[in-house]
Each structure stands twice: as structure tokens, then as C-alpha cells.
Length: 257
Image 1 (cartoon, one colour):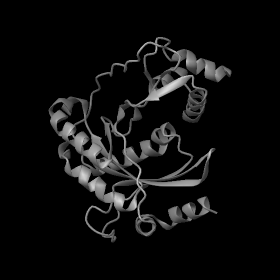
Image 2 (cartoon, one colour):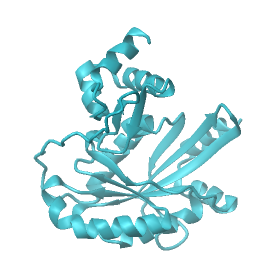
Image 3 (cartoon, helix red, strand yellow):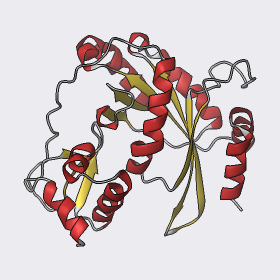
Image 4 (tube, one colour):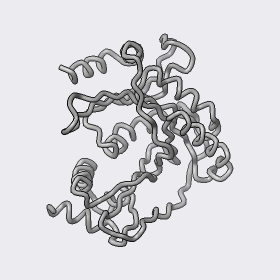
């Protein structure tokens, strides 16, 4: 291991229990790019493993003891906020820590909710946020393109309808998520609604992410993993042409040159 890899590895508990990415990075005092590069190198060497959890979880692979999720600190959260106020901080996390956790190579994050009366193709056809990404895998030929949509819901609007909205996005996307604002102080009385949402999302292959603070990746947790679809290419092309700005479309063209 390099000195950086050894330093990060030593901070992950030897007993096999999990640490969160933000917790380890805070202890190291490293910049974001340095942390993710070293962490991913340790994963590639099969020295660390990952799991879903707030902020993403890491543990040592070599420890036989069953890992356990770290206790979450009780956080003081503000009163419920409007959906529109969630877009910018959520987009910032998608463009930063979330993209690095997913090991994306090229990506664009676009807020599609704020487009006024622009024609989008029907009811529930416009997501709130979209991530477009291109990846290259060493043993799989070609370039792999994904359009990932996100439907954002505030704490006072959590119901199963969000799943059907996200499902409609799959007509022109490869994956669809719903992003649910679940403040810690409200979690207990939202449990029934969340259970119904998780169950319906699994049936339809819709991903679910919950967060207590929209701009803090440490509070994000992927509860349901989405299934990848192959939409009709014409629909996908029309979606991008309709939803994205000319500058973004030019970037996409450069990816495939």
C-alpha cells in the first residue's frame, strides 16, 4: 500500500465494523478528490468493502466479524421546507459526493424542474433533476451511457404517488430515483408511508434515496436500488433535446466524438 492508502486503511475499524465516508474523510482532513481516489484504490485491491448507508459505508474485507452499521448522531433539523428549496442542495450532492461514491467517470447534473412552460411530452414527463453519465469499463466493449432521473419530494408530500411519477420518467431514462426528505425528527411518524413507498418502488425497479439534510451527503441513504432499463432511443434523444440546454448538449456530443 502507498502511504496514503495505509493511512486511510488504518482509520477503518479492524473489527469489521463500518465507518461512513464523511467520518473517515473528516479524520484524515483530506480534500474530496484525494479521499475518493485512495478509497477506490483500496476497494479495487479488495482491502475495503462498501455498503449502503448515510454517506456511504466502508469496512475492511479481511475481518471475519460481522460488520454493523455505525450509530447515527441525532441532528437538529430545520422545519419542513418547500420542494423548490431542495433542488439546489440536492443537485450539489449529486454533482459531488454522490457521483464519486458511484465512481462515475463523466457526468452532467441538470435541474430540469425550473423550465417554466417548456413542452416536455405529457404528464409526469419532467423530472426534477437529471444526471447524464458516460462510463467505460475495461473488459466491456464500448461506451455506456445512462440518463438517471430524480423526483424530489419534501417531508410533507411523501406518498406512493412519487413512485408512479418516477416510473413515468423511464419512458426516456435508463434509471429513475425518488429523493425523499425525511428529517430525523419526523422519521417515526413517516415510517408507514416510507414502508409503502419502498415496497412499491421495489416492484417497479425505482430507486429510493432518503436524506435528512439535502446538502449533506452524510445524511443520504439509498434504501432501494434502481433497475437499469433500455428506453427507446428516439424517446431518449427527444428527452435530452427537450430538457437540456445547448451547452449541455454540446458537451454530450463531445463525449461521443
